[in-house]
Length: 101
Image (cartoon, rainbow, N blue to C red):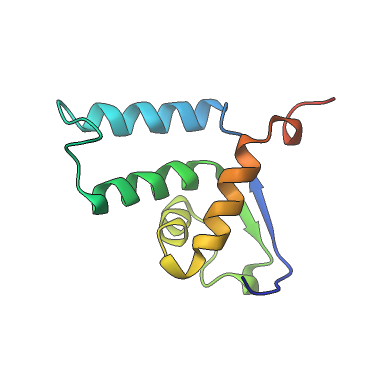
């Protein structure tokens, strides 16, 4: 990935925001299971889940758009930024980033 100077304000994977987004996505599936959905739907759901962790970013010139929940979904679903999505997902799962030692 490219060398960039940026920051992302985010919550953890155990946050209420993440849990509510996951519940909403899975409720929206109805009777579909993971085996029933398309690759495109799975990738979109993954982008939405990762984006729900993001609460802001900067500096704005480091990103194509100012932060918004919609812009975060677009960024997390952009194949050119898969390296950033991987870092967001990894950081969100590291509990020490969000809870004191």
